[in-house]
Amino acid sequence: MTLISSNNEMSSQSIFHDQHFIHSLRQQMLKFAMLQIHDEHLAEDAVQEAMISAYQHIDKFKRQAALKTWIFAILKNKLIDLLRKEKHTTAISQLEEGCSQGDSLMEKLFNDHGHWHKHEKPVKWEQPDTGIENEHFWRVFDTCLNALPERYGRFFMMREFLELDSSEICQNEAISTNHLNVTLYRARVRLRECLENNWYESEKSQ
Amino acid sequence: MMNCKQATRLLSERMERPLTAKEKVALTMHITICSGCKQFGKQMKELRNISKCYMKEENKHPKK
Image 1 (cartoon, rainbow over the protein chains, first blue to last red):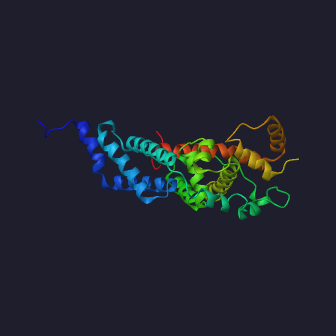
Image 2 (cartoon, rainbow over the protein chains, first blue to last red):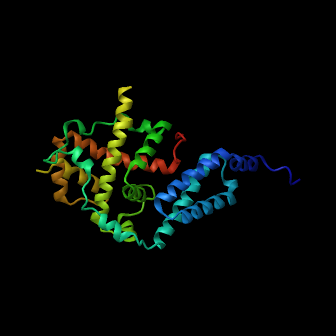
């Protein structure tokens, strides 16, 4: 009897029938893809292809979390392929706006001698691990990530989320190692500052 | 003597490439007297871990 499918299939199929889950998953994937490649159509295509691959291997997933991990791995590979193919025409203009430009946050954090301003000194993050299990933490993290200047966020995600090598990013983006390192440094300084102010310190004061 | 701006730059760069012996010595000397930069260094590693978790679970799902 073909009408009676196994329990396994039923539960796997039902993942795709959870419209709320699929919708929010798609949004997350799109957001992630758009930060990497700025072409909306290419991003949509990559997300679509990853979705289709997942659907074709539906019987592998019994939990939504497992599907999510898997589908992001697929998407990640598709984006890396696209980034490798794409010869960035924007590289030159990015270089021009480049690393010589100052960063106002740096002046806020460090005094004229290059030492921390008293109240900007990093403090110990109490139990940093607890954040990872907390939904609110990820909302703060998302907000901090989105608050980064576009180029900072893009390079940071390539390096830390897609785990591309520095040398590979430099090659793809046609930028110098120094440019990448300065950008990553500034991105990390900003993210750190934002997380400390909005999560670690506000947790402590509650 | 290295200042905090230079030290934090190296602490970020340490995530990208092995530091030279000279850089390591200067950095260690700075960190032993600067608690802020010491925390900064730890938090650079923490940021990397957080990013890994972000991708793995694509968040919202507490780790088992």
